[in-house]
Length: 97
Image (cartoon, rainbow, N blue to C red):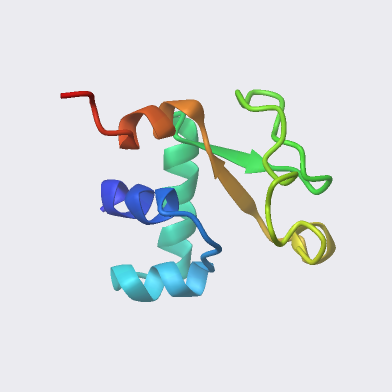
């Protein structure tokens, strides 16, 4: 189920906890636990309220290129946003033939 969730996140776009929970057939609380697990395993990086990645993340800025950067309510509502780490991007990238 973690691999499925990571695959959906790697497709891009904005996903709510409610949407992900419905697609997986689980509770929103379990989605939160799965996101935390993916972060602990190094596949996701939490985005801070100012749009910068947490200190342990490997990319300089995730929100700068986001089409929702000017309207995002993460900092206003206390929601959480995540970005794929380089580790996750390498995992999802097809290997050369």
